[in-house]
Amino acid sequence: MVALGHGYWGKNIVRNLATLGSLRGVFEPDLEKRKEAKALYPNVLIYETEQAVWDDEAAIAVAIGTPAIHHAKLALAALSAGKDVFVEKPLALTLADGQEVVETARKAGRILMVGHLLEYHPAVQELKNWIQDGVLGDLQYVYSNRLNLGKFRREENILWSFAPHDIAVILRLTNQMPTEVIATGGAYLTPGVADITTTNLRFNNGVRAHIFVSWLHPYKEQKLVVVGTQKMAVFDDRAPWENKLTLYDKGASWIDDFPVPRQGEGKAVRLDAAEPLLAELQHFIRCVQERTPPLTDGESGLRVLKVLQTAQDSLQQNGRPVAIK
Image (cartoon, rainbow, N blue to C red):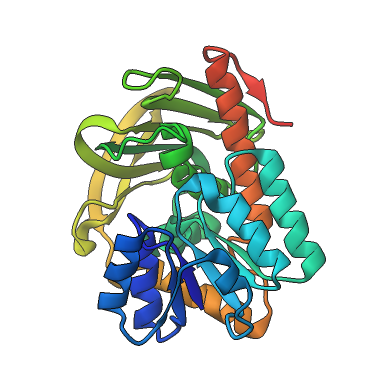
């Protein structure tokens, strides 16, 4: 496999592909980053141009880890060259571009997988199992905070940079699309580029979710809270592995027709300390080998894009509720 990009996130993809023994080469347009890749991986090919990758018949698949503005263009070029494609989130920066990528993959009969990393995290997989098995009772509410100071961007706002992770997880946990989206935010560093957003999702079955994202925040936080009628759960991705996922026997009990808090104990749940990116890329390799659809396929990527685009529409209308089309 050839990795496209050896920058901020791309180098993590390269590292994991090398660990899996599946790294054929690296394409990186920046000379200094090419030198860095060559020093780290002296036994793999270093491509200086995109065309060199497309012309390499032995490179049957590519993993795109470039800035998001290049995702759709590179994915389309790779698919047109007959390659299977793993592309980091978001699939594209517009719904129309995402639809073009998915349709091109379908027509070409190629594997297309979108890098919604958290769907391969053991904590999210356990949460999904709990919801399916009724451990939490009926799902009521989900909220997520993804906060940090930087990395600031100008080609995409915080909604498109941070929120795809949380949208993908919420769609997976609820197993449905929201009917309405409300998004508000503020641009403080670059005019027109939101640095913070709060996005509210409404679902047909009464479930609500909200997502708060910011790259203008004094500390880093990556936390997901899931509330059910019987129990509650917290996934704190900043915590050590032994404390990342906690199940709380808490909720509301009704006494004389009045809700009373039930203050049960919280129990940390043991998880296998597995790097989600490694598991994600293993999954892609297996899908390429077996010609099976990925968990996070192109259609999954489009669902996330549709929510993002609707949130962007609401954001541009100062928080007016916008229905999912």
